[in-house]
Image (cartoon, rainbow, N blue to C red; front, top):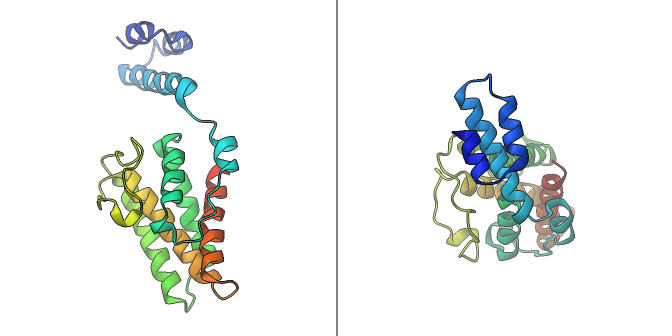
Length: 195
């Protein structure tokens, strides 16, 4: 059935890939088909993530959680990523925040933001849906998004914004709030693009 569906969609290499799985369990056929279909869809619709997104890092100096520019940037990133890739980026952002905040610091705001980022990263792992970034966001900021911790996209975005808040809070000893916000979110975005 998977091979027939691949043929109907005219996914040339998918049929070959699935033929190689002929001796495996039917679930492996379905996983192969899913991979082929996603690859096929991306070939015609996926933006060149690394090149295009790297050229267009927002320069919004506001807090990441209330930035329309950053919300749209992360939508584009999430749209062009698999859930596994997105989870890896979120985990890397949390790890970066913990390192930069020198976890255990006396900066209470940074510590609380790190803890919330880690909590949301954990929620993302068990979230049952990934709907928030399935279409362009219709809101202007995180504050306007409906809180939904069963949505992996919501948890991912709120985790990276909390990680950015933590880094910005730690950087405020060295620079003003706007520069700290901008530096923190761009740092996490660059980290995301190299994962």
